[in-house]
Amino acid sequence: MSLVNLLVVIALFQYVFFAARVGWARGKYAVPAPATTGNPIFERHYRVQSNTLEMLILLIPAVWIASAYWNPLFIAAMLAVYIVGRQVYYVAYIEDPKKRSIGFGLTLMPILLLLVAGLGGAAWAMIQTGI
Image 1 (tube, one colour):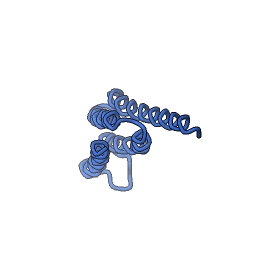
Image 2: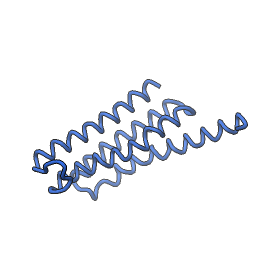
Image 3: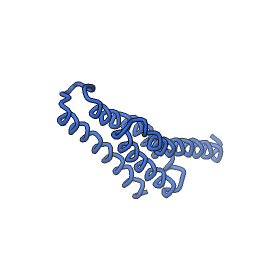
Image 4: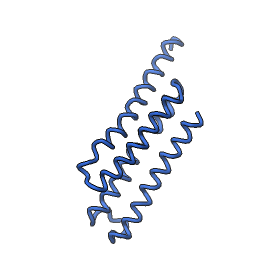
């Protein structure tokens, strides 16, 4: 389980990095707070950070629930794919938002698998206990 926890922390630090890049882009492209528009490159950084937050809201509970029922190596593998997917998404989206699909797929796929794993584990546990 320590590996799972480590990878969750890495995913959170990745989000902190993306948020820091928004701050950097704000300064570089002269987009004063609280504005969220004004320069296309800044807006790309902002969307990566926002979309990552949207994914984390799904990822962390999915990890928590699936971890109760499945092997930690499976959970860790899904987290690793998510982290790599987010990095691919970040690089592609900053370059050209039309290129984000592979990174988005590598982000969403492990989240969906973890959700299904959590659902299946919970259902199986209910069947086993008669609840």
